[in-house]
Each structure stands twice: as structure tokens, then as C-alpha cells.
Length: 207
Image 1 (spheres, rainbow, N blue to C red):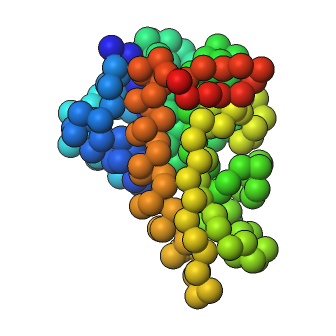
Image 2 (image 1 turned 30 degrees about the vertical axis):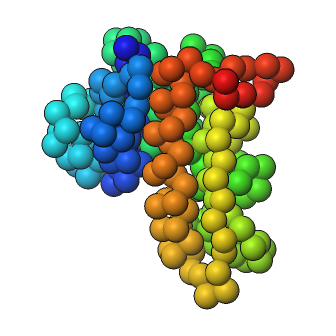
């Protein structure tokens, strides 16, 4: 049984999707053993506590730079004996000391179809604002491995929704979360825990 550690910074809607999937028995071969938050008092911590999942808070503001913060996160991941790390609305880009130590063992969800509307600065509503500004007809979400570059790791799964004429960034965000993120993130986690993701030439293939 693989140890899944989830990193959060806010409300934890994707964490809740994972908790619910786990409760339904949909995540095979792994279980959420810890939730680490970059802020105290966020609702994601309440979600974890309600599901009897241990929590740890490592406040980003207490560290002077990304490297020292990442080292603290890395030490905790090692303590937790993490097999898989899931970034679920985690708002800090981790230094390569973490991504190298956990190569192809960190999964992130990005609310667009990578390589569109991704990279540094593309997060939250900004992604959907740009997609609507561009006039795309479909959008979606990407579940991918994390490497040292923002949103540049191997793609595991992608899902698509239609963009409607009267969409606002908030409406589009909600549609993508409900129809893609909350379904594909638990699926990707289960695939990892079942050893069904294969890496060839830097690309991820589902077996």
C-alpha cells in the first residue's frame, strides 16, 4: 500500500475529490497518509481532519526563500515515507531539491490543456481568463508529473469541456473542476499506485 501525501494551500476541493474517491474504494493500492499545508487555518486542513487524515502545517511565510522552504517540505516528505506526492492547489513552486528526490513521484493538476495557458504565473482564475480572452472553444485540465519547470512534466491524463459563449472565468473554472479535475486526479493517483504508469523517453503512458 503506497503512502500518498497531499500538499495544499487553500480550500482543498481537489483534496476532497481524493478523499471521496478513497472512501468509495476507487483509489487502489494507496491511501492518503498525510496532508501538508503551506498555510495555517485553511479549509483543506478541516477536510483532512474530518476524514481522520493527519495534517502538518509548514508555513511558507516563515522561510526566506523557495529553497529553504523546499528543504523543509522535503524533510517532512521523507519523514512521512511518501511514495506519491499530490499537489492539490499548492501555491508554491518547489525547488529542484524536491523534484529530483521524488522524480516521477509528484503529480499536479493544471486547469488547462497543457501546453496551452501554463507555466509560471498561470494559476487559478488567471488560466481561465486567458483561455476566454483567446477565444478557445474547448478547455480542460491536465494531470501531469512535476519536474523543475512549471507545468512541464510528463502528461498523464487530460480531459476536455466545451467553452460556452456566455462563460465567465468562474463558470468555466467550475465546469472544469467538476467534469475533469475531480474525476481525473483520483484516477491518475490510482493508476500510479497500481504501477500502471510507464515512462518512456520522458513521456507517460498508461498500461
